Length: 137
Image 1 (cartoon, rainbow, N blue to C red):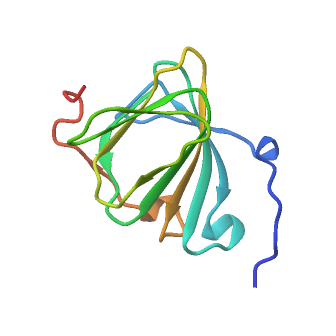
Image 2: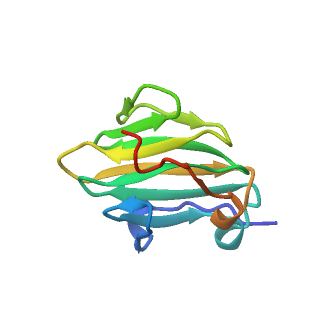
């Protein structure tokens, strides 16, 4: 049985993440996963997005996603759908298979608590780029 743990975000090292479908980069702080905390059905990270950050349109077929803004303003865009600006004090639920894109529309870094449910590792969420991911505004 796993131990009860109190995790302090500032004590978790950050990992710079870049990929072909991300404008700028994101800083990932891995909090929960099967490998880290023996939680087989939840993955959680604190993600920091610099100004100008875009994670272009994509979806995850195997996990539901919850995004909780901690600082700054993050714009969510679905397909179809109108943009929604998210701020601290709000929570966004993105069901598996839903197309989505995130942008930092703040003039400063934005930080979110990012949770996947139903999987124990990020690599298990699945990933599919939208066929027109760079033409969606």
